[in-house]
Image 1 (spheres, rainbow over the protein chains, first blue to last red):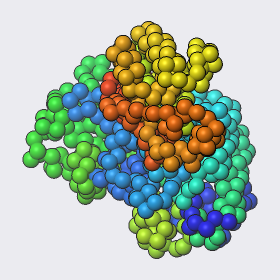
Image 2 (cartoon, rainbow over the protein chains, first blue to last red):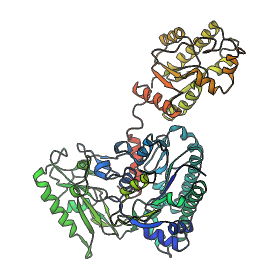
Image 3 (cartoon, each protein chain N blue to C red):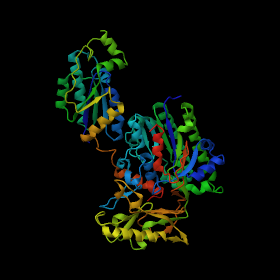
Length: 429
Length: 199
């Protein structure tokens, strides 16, 4: 039994509160059911936009995008309009683990999305999605060898899994097992105070087979359910060990997701809408935003981040600063009234000036669209149709992430960025 | 890529071999050819028969320097892990070796005596072993080593990090490798984001 006041956090990427509760109640996830029984399960808001890189960065820093500077998986070079891929080195806000380290506390962080390339923390970090090279995903580097020998996998092969669902399930199982083995080793060999592991296979499964999770008649339903059983066993093993080694474990065990999920009714191409309505134009044959024309007044980055093509901010931008507010209002109004077969598409159009604050707020979008569940916002610059479908069946949702906390948190507006503060208070701060 | 010689010097037990072995995979990861010339290994092969008199020690160190220089001028990173106690000989090798990087593994005798995994310091202190560097033979610490790691107060990771960063800053290994996303990585990231419907 450890005399230290340890704290353990398990993340389940993309798991919505409703699904978690349903699978717990139906006996598919008995270990999680026991944790729910002992703790306090509630819904929680994700970041805006509601995607993992933004939400998890808000979790790990306790800050919002205007402060930590991560607004999506992609950004754009304001000179060349080429897509850029923000990474962990651009997050200047201290993380929870940095702050704990200042108090002499050691963290083990395994598979935290949006932490690539790994940087030194007081403890051990193994990056999660979109980690590419394992040698840049591990800090300190002395853990690299053992992870390699264990054939540790950061993620499934998403490119292959999208088309090959037999492979998807094999890879999900393998990755979860490898994660468990790595966790066991780190647990054994690091004298930690704070331990966190994130299961990301749930998000991958939902992107490709959300319908199989939801629909009992789907041919892959049983496999989807079995994967949840495996995730539950994983959580059960973490819990059992934590409970065996620590006093008062119920008060020091947390679980959360970074956003929810639902099925896709239609994909909604925001740039196609901007083009059709005269706000965006690309050079003939232009395949990406590098071909944006100076007369373009707005463009979008995934999922629904609209940037006004402002003079002085973008090399070809022509919108004068005193026209930005009226243009934002015009576009916001238009999206508010967008319908698909009479059904409203957009739930909220956020003005980024109201949404974001902090030193990095100016590098973010000008408008952020939040769609109604079922309308999956996309930002392909070349899409010609506003509404379409692909083989993807699941999309992220904003306000049904889950939090399983040791005590009730009565805050209707609780969002993922609030959790770091609660965890720090778990160490008496 | 240019080769170079990473010359570790320090007392017995100060971490020279541990560091060279830990650095080797990090360099290999970056597709850099590397060879370790460990003091103990060299003595059983290249310098078999030599003793521990000053003259023999100097010959041993010069031989290591000769081989290290041959390797590094052919694009290999040669890492040496011999005590190499005498400054004059180290400086002589430095003068003849292109891209010579001296790494001093600093550690106090008190700490080394406490560690003493082979019991050598105990034997040296009791007089059982003669000519033992740091106890009964001199060790001339470098005054201008390119890199100094203090293995008494730094963790292995901290020392490793210091060495790798220094080599990056000297331009001897690709700089900023873990700071930016390479074009090759961007291709992979695009594929992954595309597979999940983000692009």
